[in-house]
Image (cartoon, rainbow, N blue to C red; front, side, top):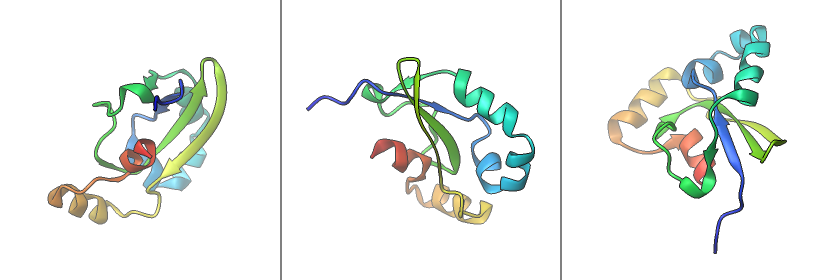
Length: 100
């Protein structure tokens, strides 16, 4: 079964944006601009190296030039939890959400 022809864009400041939501809201214009114009990654090319295996983050879903969805994954994770998961080598957050 082939994957649908959807693409995702991932915010470059993955953990920082998702964990510190107050700052993300304060600078939401720049965050939204990046999610609208940043590099695209096809789901059919999954996994892609730009998506860390452990991260909290923002992402947008597109079908061609049509915006479909914006989401966040791992926002309740603390920096300590993210580091613990990195150390044990278990995927978490953004990677798992986009792999689904």
